[in-house]
Length: 121
Image (cartoon, rainbow, N blue to C red; front, side, top):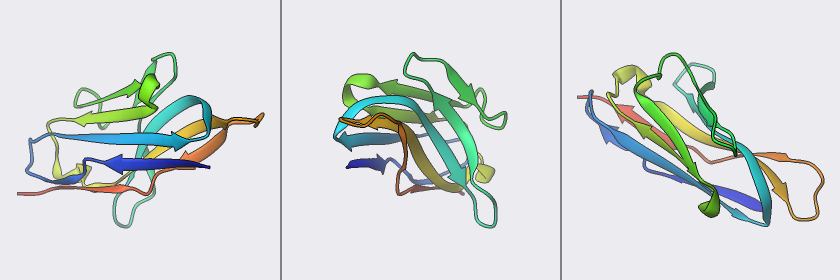
């Protein structure tokens, strides 16, 4: 059993910064891609950023230059540093990982429970 625990969300003023964390725990053999997605009210869930185990990253155009994704493989943790936040960044942010558990032959997609980010003055 693998769990993802997210933290770091909250209320921030426009132009401010937040750092999200997502830690995976359980019977983990390896993790391939880790990423962040978000879902605003009335909208579909969308990709924010991903990072592979080797380090290459991918960002949504709307966050390029403002958000930075990183990971600590030793801690099975992925981070999302968000800067120059805008009201349109308001959403529930979800962590997603591909996890290979001990004894398994396939990677399984695991989602976190989500953390609210609200950008408002």
